[in-house]
Amino acid sequence: MAEPQAKILIVDNEIQVVKRVEALLIPQNYEVITASGGEEALRLVQQKEPDLILLDVLMPVLDGFEVCRRLKDNAETCLIPVVFMTVLSDIGDRVKGLEAGADDFLTKPVHRDELLARIRTSLRLKQTIDHKVHALHRQLQEATERESQLFTNMSHELRTKLDVIIGFSEVLQEQTCGELNDEQEEYVNYILTGGNQMLDLVNGLLDLAKIEAGKMEVRLEELDLRSLLAESLELVQGGALAHDITLSLEIADDINTIVGDKRKVQQIVFNLLSNAVKFTPDQGTAGIKATETSEGVQIAVWDTGVGIAPEDQRRIFEEFQPLSDAHVTTTVGTGLGLALTKKFVELHGGTIELESRSGQGSTFTFSLPRSPLPASHVREQSRVL
Ligand SMILES: Nc1ncnc2c1ncn2[C@@H]1O[C@H](COP(=O)(O)OP(=O)(O)O)[C@@H](O)[C@H]1O
Ligand SMILES: [Mg+2]
Image 1 (cartoon, rainbow, N blue to C red):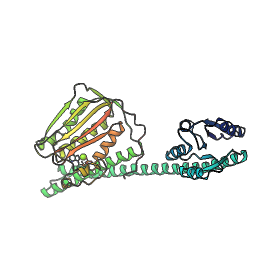
Image 2 (cartoon, helix red, strand yellow):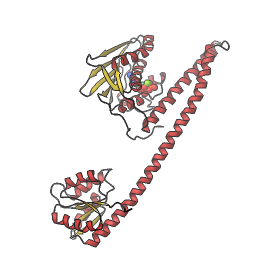
Image 3 (spheres, rainbow, N blue to C red):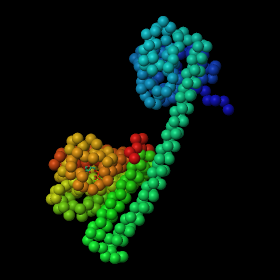
Image 4 (cartoon, helix red, strand yellow):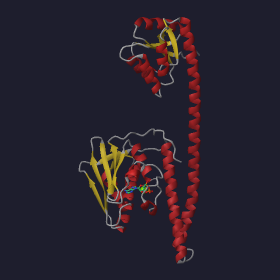
């Protein structure tokens, strides 16, 4: 089977030069595309993905240096070899060309043998680089795959063991196999709380790992926002009552259904609400306000709690962020809630923002677009594990 021929883009505003070079390349079975200016060249590079570019220097509007600079600045095009066609005497042009990222030079008027030799050399070099890049990419994919598998197996093991710890602590706590004295009961409760927190942590880490490996599924369906928000409030009502915190729910009349992944939207709202209750002192207030926007809905979860210091607001959505405020150490949590919340919002194509003042309260506002992206892929990010 014949090798597919390399695709070469010739760029020159002088039509005779283009025609001449084209006439030299076609008998060699190269696939030739041509452009008479810089902008056309950049457009064709995107559309046709050439293997090599023969580029004139002097062109009106966008000259060869600028075209080369833009190609080399773009991660998608920086590996395409650029061979400048310059006039022999112009050393200055060659220096500028090198600075712009040129891979080689050809002297005008172009000589057939030199043209073909330089094209072959540049293409060979590109092929070697392409192979190396592909090999590295494959290695990276395999390593990510292995790491993700290892993590999945490990969390399965951890969960199985935690089930034993939690299960038997519950049996002891129920005192069905014998009475416990006060001290023993207190210690069993510690074991149970610790076990449950560890389970939350493992589940949270597993979710983050899945998102980062691009393996988190998003099942979009029509959701009744009113009942979803009311149910979420119900879940934190007990905690709020215990601290005499008043909860409120405000939904604009025109909002009925939204499209989203039910479990994830529930978790977003629950995470924000449970923080609102957790970080609001007794007799405070907290709530949800949902409004419609031109792009979809906007849901604000607010509280009149301790607030978040300005220096902490930037990194609040990162995993395990120790915050500067001392009250944090007195509360229990995984430190993953907001990181997961942000990722779940982003999986829907939405954004989340925070407005807060120390001592006065916080409002986390997230948006959900009317037609969320079926998040088929998640941007690659550095792993946190
Ligand atoms: N509504 C809020 N008011 C004040 N501080 C908050 C609020 N929500 C989050 N925080 C701060 O951000 C930290 C991280 O929150 P989160 O990621 O949910 O973890 P966790 O709740 O497990 O501590 C909390 O420990 C707290 O210090
Ligand atoms: Mg939390």
